[in-house]
Length: 238
Image (tube, rainbow, N blue to C red; front, side, top):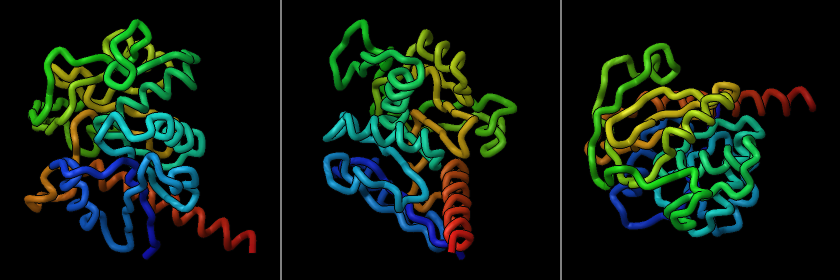
């Protein structure tokens, strides 16, 4: 079995979401290690040993610039990337800055409410709230979870608005699930091996022993494939 190393990029706190993350680490499969990597630590500056990057909930981060840089690195190097809750929000900021060329693109929570915001307060706070997530038929996400709506758990109050979503879609992202109050629930950058963003938190339920969410299973599968490819390349060089 190919070993897989995943970085949980975030700043661990005594919060339900992070306790659930700790629980799900042991559910990711044989040979998979998932390590916390703080945004203000030294390890975040060199992620080359990791096969997958998960920018986890918990924004604002201790080092917001490092969080944005992580997204850039994973996107540009085609490293399997999962951004959940704050991870989605910061990935949107990164995409606006570095792909759409909006240098001052900002986040209302971290930077204050301003005309430069591309991540805005939601119409209704979803702190500790469940919402019916509706997969968009025919997308990668719907192939993983099916077309039937399901309840997704949230601990967030921010997300991209309709204008931002329109620009993201024009620039190549795909909306793969939606929900009331939250707007977009899942975004994908399909040009990458795996670059998926969710507002809901797919790891919630691990503490209760719920099965691994299919999206997390796909993330690990893609990270395992990258690990296999890297090892194969090393052998060919030798």
